[in-house]
Structure formats: structure tokens, C-alpha cells
Length: 189
Ligand SMILES: [Zn+2]
Image (tube, rainbow, N blue to C red; front, side):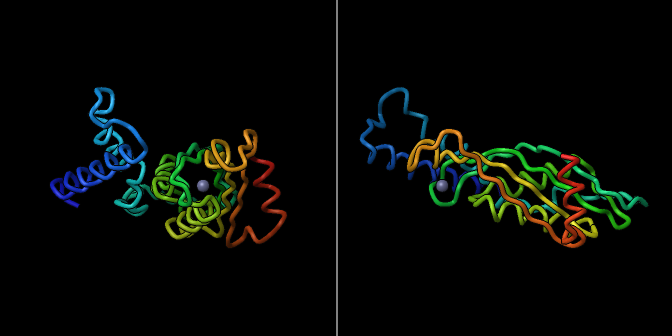
């Protein structure tokens, strides 16, 4: 999307946010709220920037030859996302492990892939699966496993108001069908 089109889109989002704030019962003309629609629109645009990029773009050329066949694990990558049911934040950490097949990926690139999928409207189950499957596709790994722990504000601030709950999800493919390999990964993290 070119910059003009992007600016127009953000302005349109801002005008909808202004209407929402008004419908909620606020005075949109009071000083503290004057630039709020624009700021909120920009924040939302950033938090959903995953729609406007791809993991291929963020990884680029950062794949390297590697002869080992042991698990490579990256632990506790922070993420911030928005739940697709309430458009409220959920956030936590995700740990990824993979068994390379001749290629490894730059470690920071795994974190960038996480952001590509976190910065969308998501459910944690799909988010976990997408990352595992994308890392496998990009590296050609023999298998990938992803374990995610998330706190959902839609559960904490509303609804059942459970303050201390966390949701865990796991997704694996390829050689991680083998339970002993999963156990090895889980002991690493
Ligand atoms: Zn929700």
C-alpha cells in the first residue's frame, strides 16, 4: 500500500473511532480527546501491521547452512496480539523449537515471524499453529514445535474476570510427532 492510500485508510479509521467515542457517551471535543481518534487509529494500524507484511519479507536472506540435526530452541519470545472475538489484547510468550534439515534461520528472524502473526486479529490456537507451520515452510526443517502461553484481557477485564488464568497452546509438525522429541524440547524450555 502506498503512503497516500495508507494515510487515507488511517484517517478513515480515525473518523470511525471518533464516532465510537461519541456513541460511548463522551464529548469528543474536550481537550484531552481532540487528537485521540488519530492516535488510536495509528496505534491500531501498528498493532495490525501483520496484515501488510509477510514472513518471507521479514526473513529475507537470513537462512544459513547448518549440518547439525539437534533441536534448535528459542525460548520465551514475547508477543502482543488482539483477540479476534473482542478486539482486546492478549499477550504472553511463545517458545519455538525445530530440527533443521541443512538450514537454520537467524534467531531474531523467528521473533520477527512471531510479530507478523501477532499483529493481526488472532486466536491463540491459530497463532501458535501458524508460527510452527511458517517456520517449517521457511526453513524446510524436519519438524517444528511451538508452545505458547497467553493472558487474555477479554477474560480478565470482562466476562468471567479471572485474573490469574493463562491459556497454553501447543502445535507441532513433522518429527515432533515423536513424543520423546517433544519431551526433549519441553525439558529445554
Ligand atoms: Zn476475546
